[in-house]
Length: 470
Image (cartoon, rainbow, N blue to C red):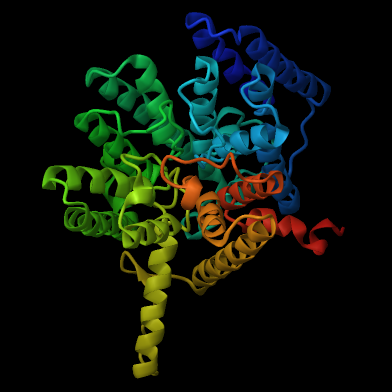
């Protein structure tokens, strides 16, 4: 994976040379160092052992994200665009985890090579580094199912067999690449410069949200904003569902209809609320209110973080709604962060079941998805993840306040980092940035980005003493 990351760094030489931004030597040094270090490790340890112990699988997943984020700091530091390691790690971790939080107050002055590197880290990390490992290195000798569930633990993965994992990952990667090419083409045909189309597609199809403009999506034409909104919407849909739709496998589509309808229903209802709220409070035309509501709501729901306007000036209840939507997230099996729509749906139906059982204690009323009962194991898993999510956010807010950040900023930053949404509240909200945060706060936010990307349990399990015992 270091060889892959080094190759991606070297590809940033193309804009460096084309735009003559003066970063060619720094990008070359960063890319070559990363690539040849990976090559040296590959040659030195070519006899890979099969990893069957789940503890090693969890450890490998965490190490992959940490190491690649650390090496991702090299282009920022070598080119001099960032001068401190804390800033570079924050920006690199935000990119690799497709969070979208940034320390840059203005990005338009950045060299073209760095702009592409920021976009590429999100596109690279959006698919999931571990899934990419399994897709391009099928002979790695690792138990694929153990590694897959280590990165993305949840209800949607329960029941998958390791024998079908390789095909699933290839099909998912195929959908991801196809959508990327499709939206680069659509944005280019809409009149956008190919350079802009490439970067904007990379950061929005990955649910990342980095931008090459200070005002994010605000400067785009209305058609282009709707195209980007469609890209974000599809990035929030389960990629295997998209594959089954394209290949007309209706029998498999039915297994995810409940989750899809919940995701789309949430998007429609929230968009209508924001539209009417903007019309009533900001008195903007209906067409603009609908456009802003549609694009911004799907950006929040898919935890992308792209902005169609400075949302920090919007009505406060809209901001609160956006916080709730970012915690929900898109469908399981997509590039989005948050709890995921499936877990929220199971939580909702489990609460409804408990209330029904209190009225009718002898009735048989199981929690169902797509007409089938959900096992108690899955319900327990979802409940545990929800409780851990709430506790982790609570502890994170307290720790960030101890780092000298005020309460509003702390709440917004922790939720934005753990969900992968990016923009927070206060100075870090809207078109703002995290540059004014203290060094300790930046390290803490970077940790919570990783924690959220690995859905808490995968990283927290390493902190359990029993994990390290034989």
